[in-house]
Image (cartoon, helix red, strand yellow):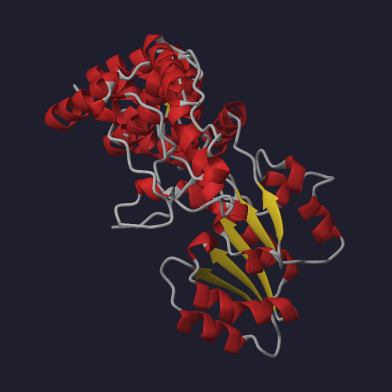
Length: 412
């Protein structure tokens, strides 16, 4: 059996002008283009979604500058591997391409730092994560961070059309524009994924004319990357919560659908639990009970039926009155504690005999409606207000009214 190289590998750009969608870096005025023209290479971190050209740019730079190049995968390679690389290049220097740099252990980083600092190692880090959140500051401060953009589906379509014509000896089939458009739109903005789709269709329908229905049978569903260590994953969850918080029911259902296609029920349920307490709360307290009921139903029935109770709950949440009173109130109290506002507790609230204060603790249940004046906050905070509330729904309005009534009775 002859093992063929993947098409995505075969057509990987060999020059910067072949890279799609990154003109801000590799176009005529791009910083990487100018770096090559000036024959000056610096350490950098290339940051962006999967399949947008990070590895390709690193490979081209390695070829252009003609210096010793090594690769190091921060997920799988060991510190001993890095030591061997440094030892080999100690007299000449090297270009070190570090894949998944956000996963690099601290002890490996500590070993690498002085070599990057001295310039003996020029480093190109590759990551799908925001390096300002995920890469050690000491490493990051010694590099230029360059962000790659998500590839537009029209750019992917044009690339697929070009590849399908230029590689007819490899792709022995015909694609309609409708099929190429379908692949480009549903590739998750990932060039590699779109090329793989092109290739698998050629394998499935050799010497045939492929139409959209044939393509859908093989490709089955959109290519949506789900990696819990990637920004894309958190971006979708963030957009999901913000859409519900913003009461946009259609956007909420859109992002729910994206998560459902990924079949990530655990993350959906966890995020909906947070939304129930953080964003809706007193606006509609019954949503918490509904959340628990939905959770049980989803666990019990699984996919694909789980989409129905989840849709029901998300619609209800998006259109529900909203209140963040609980979050705001406790955060105000925590802020005071962190600022050192922890004065002495009033003596009558302490369950030990004391002789500093003759005042006794008053038992509220001995009084009508269990309301009686008594100071609970320490003296220096006795007029502090943490709960203010907003009239978001009937329940919170009732709480605000009750709070006013209580303060009239128990405050002097």
